[in-house]
Length: 141
Image (cartoon, rainbow, N blue to C red; front, side, top):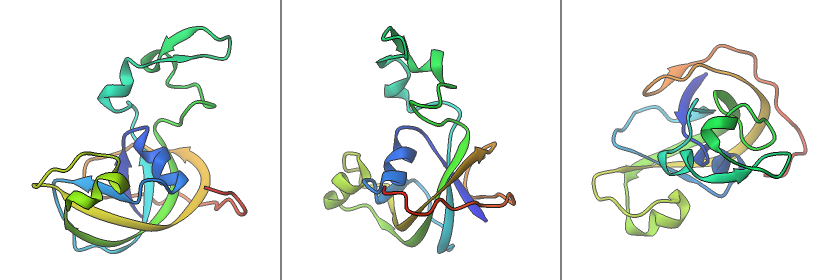
């Protein structure tokens, strides 16, 4: 299956269905199912964001990237349908969770299907993952 690596927290937003546009500087002719995988490291702004660990102490995300209950890193999370790619429009800001950039492309996503997370070593661009996918039925996103 074709896969795409996305930094956290954006991958989780796609899983939840709140982010329906992924922004990229490049296009592809591919349309269809796409495995959403998380990068090993979070988005830059999140790396030093203080959060509480299980004991209620402040930590930074870099120190607890394996803390499963907070966020998955280096794992496949869900399958979505990539149904369109077009130049970004100003009205895409909300659905992409980003400000407008006139040199980016909006990758339009729908039909989110949660899966049982499994480890994936991400790559740049689209890449192939040949692991069996176990869909989670009845999970609200």
